[in-house]
Length: 158
Image (tube, rainbow, N blue to C red):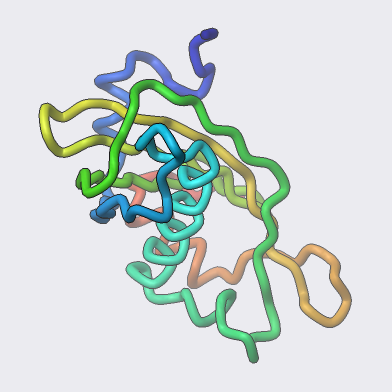
């Protein structure tokens, strides 16, 4: 398998960039007939991580509430599978904003099995903020941009 190009400069240094982690226990329905975590479940975990990340920074309702004027859509997503995971195993899911655009966020993910600190999967994806009525991209609100930049210890440009 080719190395995931978003993992820079080394895996260890990349993992140190994650400031947000949440725990997930693998449920039986998320496994396949071989007892492994089904490959589609990783993307569901990434989505759950995004929700918890936004809630942690205090603006989840701005983009996730049914009655909100804004919404996020996934523009692209990728997952790299590194090792197996199994029913009832506890994972740590890391989520981070790697790049903050005008109306988009590039997110990165890591899934680590707690036992033996084993890397299970890594991923990246881009989400875009849209106005629900016009279905057009809109700028990320300044307060959200500032919260992300502060939390991720990144410098805001522009």
